[in-house]
Amino acid sequence: MQRLTPKELAAMFGALLLAACVFGPWYAAVSPLAEIAGSAGIGDKSAWQVHHILRWVFLVIAIAPFVLAYVIARDHQLSWARGELTAVLSILVVGLVLYVGVIDRPGEPPGQIELRWGWYVALAGSLLMLTGAALRSGESAGARKPPGMI
Image 1 (tube, rainbow, N blue to C red):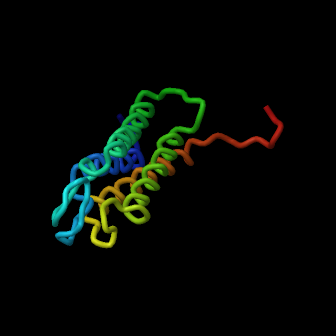
Image 2: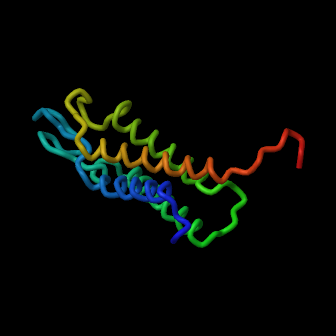
């Protein structure tokens, strides 16, 4: 456990935030005529209630920083830079969270669906995951060779 740095701890904390906020309120219908996740009227909905496939994607990706910490703690040798896979998965989850919150917000009419604190904390957690993993990946990247060299 002494091999873990604040970078891995930050990524793990971000993953915990993301996983916990899947169950917190992400969206709120602010009009009695609005409909979200099959229910009409005013009320809050979590990502767990609204996103039937993405909820599992968020939870599985939240495991990645813990796998990274295990690899570092056990000093396993990898064929890629440590933290690289976690960084790629973090980029994916940041993109997904932004997409479902900004570009394609669920519910009808979209103008009557607002974001709640769960979405913002999930975004912060995913960015924290990305920062920790990217810093770790950059730290353990090997020396680059020119093209054509083996």
